[in-house]
Length: 360
Image (cartoon, rainbow, N blue to C red; front, side):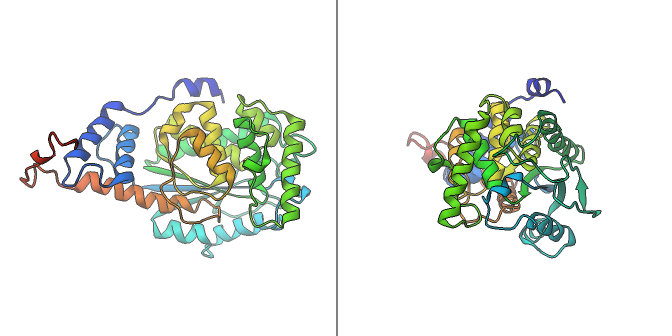
């Protein structure tokens, strides 16, 4: 996988299509701008697809599962075997959160094992295990080699490619892996050159005060030891990343390469999105953030990329649960621009908007 060659082929939004969509939004039977984010989403979608009117009916959501060696340092409240347990649950159809939301929103759920301890033999799970026991404990050594980090990025990129070849209209990215709020915070801090854990590290799944202080100490120590290069996303991932974050990074890069809109979930997802953005800032133009995460590192990454999440639901489950909900909202945005009448079509005079500072 030659990242430099991929980067050269990523281009930004179709400015002409986006402008046509903006003009159409202003001609629809409503006060200009009155549908807010729904209007901006439809304009972004036009820029992505090159069409003013398009569909998001064929939806796919990937959940990447991976274990993290950093769990050995006591940075998570949940036992590590939960990664395996939860992935089995998603595959069995036992109606976990992501199963219910994907089913309700007509999203095809696809599960990928990047390196879950114990492994899972299940026809509903793609076996892409690169490290059988998950990553190394990055408090003591590099999380993974550069070669494995690159392979994990390639896995995500290939799933974006397959989604595109299958004609999927929109992609979601989620994860499961105990300890991955630590890897996400470390990756975001490394990418943004932040040393202060007070600004970037949250409690994750509900740590006690003592465990929370330990988590901050561990991340600070790891970053000081490894000194990841902020301009080298493979270096960041190999030193303090996770296999799930690496795969999602590749998925975001692939979404931009194949010109598909991709939804961002919470802090783990946005860590991957930030790394994709560092790889090539144009990848941002294909990203649609779903909900605000309570994790402080999320807000730092969102601000760095100038992304504004559309929802504030107090969610912190993970799994990419914000993605199917957001896909429904994107669908509503497309329904407006695809089906709403214009002033001309209903023979309604909109001259009152001229000369009053209101865009017609």
